[in-house]
Image (cartoon, one colour):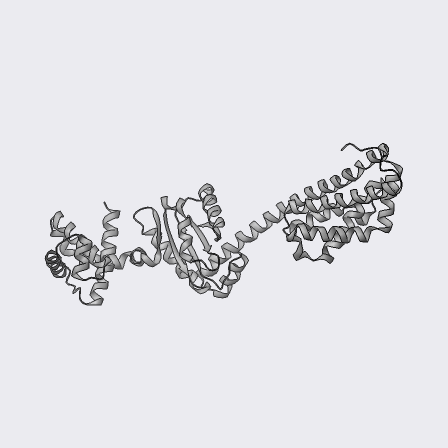
Length: 397
């Protein structure tokens, strides 16, 4: 940086301010900073004043053209490192140095008027040393801030990645206290419900995740994503007062993949929710984001393919001899029966069939399957068998 000619009176004023007026300048600078930058209020005036004293001292020594003593020589660098660790915005930190510039400029002009130098061209040119000293501090602070912020970012990323992996490991072992601790490390509130997400989005597709994360953040949803066993795993937590289900509305990019979400009421419920979502993805016949609580049967048949497959084979054995037309007609009636409350009226409306036709078809289904649809346990068996039967048919089509 170009150094302006140093006027002897400018140097003398800098030394006087450092020796006699530093406390007042620090107090005024601290007061103005807290007023214009609310983010500094949480740090406290005393803490701010301590660092302000070092920074202003370094500035005045530089204006005077003297060599900074060791105790303040790296004050600007220390400030950058400290504010990065405190997560104070870099622009706010820079503004604190601009306040120093304004205060010092006012102090030097007052001194110039007292000495009759306020029209002296050489003196006024020498005041450029104030700007140069403050800019030197800002440059040192900015470089230190950015380096410290990058180190912290890398450290936080590594720490969060490790916490996420421990979370998955502990949830598998049903270690509730450990799960809660890792959720806290990931900045989730363990007292509030979460949503766990599983998707077959390929590992490394950061563009889609970046878009999703940005949208979630804009809508006040805290999130964390990582990959495990060739699946994307995500944790979502809506802002207080909002419905957890609203999170799902922000996952548009995952609709092109087999994805599932499950509600997590407490840390103890994470393992089962994660398992259910994994099974729902494994059994999905087509892309889309589906909620576990709306597709329990699909998750069950995916998790227990052998036993549900055997059940489906027994229940629907008689369907193999039917014509395609009749089989499709009975399939439509079963789907409508399971999707409604099971009354003739509701099934008729859902299947677009006459009530008498529905009665005849339901009787035929009972005869072929050997199940009584009026009996809750038999209806449950039909639901499980039907889900498995459709799943196997889809995978073999």
